[in-house]
Amino acid sequence: MSMLKRGLALGLMATLVGMAGVSCENKAAKEFAKSQNSGNLGASASVKQLMAARHLTESDVEAALKTFVPPGKRDEYMIFASGGQSGQILVMGVPSMRLLKVIGVFTPEPWQGYGYGGESNKILAAGAQGKQALSWADVHHPNLSETNGDYDGQFLFVNDKANGRVAVVDLEDFATKQIVANPLVGSDHGGAFVDPNTNYVIETSQYPTPLGRDYAPLSAYKEKYRGVAVFWKFDRKKKRIDPSQSFGVELPPYTQDLADAGKLGSDGWAFINSFNTEMAIGGTLQGKPPIESGASQNDMDYMHIIDWKKAEALVKAGKAVTIKGMKVLPLAVSGAEARGQRQQRHERQVLKKQHAESQATMRAVELSRLGERLQQDRRGAHGDSAADDERREPVQAEEPGNEPEYGRGSGHLGSSQTEHLAPHGNHAREGEFQAQGEEQEGNAQLAEQ
Image 1 (tube, rainbow, N blue to C red):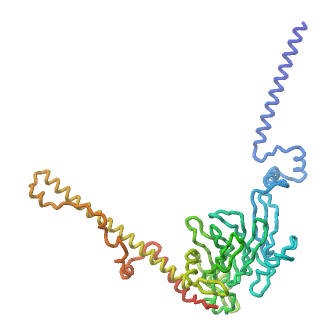
Image 2: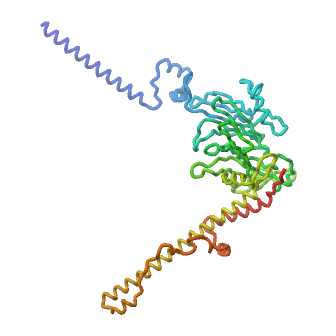
Image 3: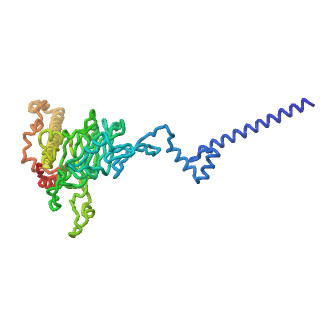
């Protein structure tokens, strides 16, 4: 009897253990499946109480966790944001969005003593426009230095839109090292963007002014007012801009906006968009439309595309004029160079077309001769006389070097010939820009000052 009781007890125990095991297994599977649901955090009781007390959803908590960076740990990215009229740069971490640092640039910054003695006072003083000391700014568009077209994190460049200035910030210590004032313009907006290897920091004007910051009445707007793109030479070793090696390129009296330098296939070019090609100047008191309306009449404006390497070569060749101590490439010089390049491009296209047509003609002649030969062979196969064979002219292969004369040079491409060639592709549009450029050049006589 005792043996029977012992066996029943063991069987019951095994059944209970098996049931408990199945129960645990099912519960674990359910908990795992529940944790895989989107937005489910599997929060502890205390966290759930906190969520309830603050009326937070699981999505709220999940978003907070994605942006949370514990103290002592670094953010994955940094944002260098313009501080606008504070005159400073704000450094924020991502994903935490914590404010990591305020970099004093164009204005004094008391929290870190920038502009309150020492070297920082000299930096701010160097940013004066002429005799006008400046302690305010409107910071726009910070740009990082680049190596081979990629951000290298070494330097930061930023512009003061309100006063036409550019600053250099060294990211080794997050401190401003230099401020340079543009002697040509009253404002800038194209930022302080760089070429792929930071050879130049490129600053573009915003509102046109007489180059050199001199006065001229608005009645002389088309004749006296201009935009400009300034190519500030940057010396990496000295960590400074070198104004003596810098130059400007005169632009039409449109309002230049944002800009950037080309990379890879477009390396060597600078791209600057513009508006107000209507050259509106306002004048509501005189019955004219406000400038915002007058500057919006055209459906499209222009993009300025500058071959800055060619501009650099022209300046070194002595084609620039000097305005307020800076070398400036006039519109007349740039326009003449552009027309010359268009003419060369047109001539190359003409030669290419003529060569293609000649090749097609030569292939047609060879096929014609081949056809004649085949016909003669067929007649010989049907019993033509040997005399007929003797009268056949042999087909000789073209010897190397017997290509048409135009293939060896452009000596036969006279100007009278090119004048009568119809424009191809974009040449009709280029003609419009050329006419526009000639009109601009007529108004682009810079006075040496």
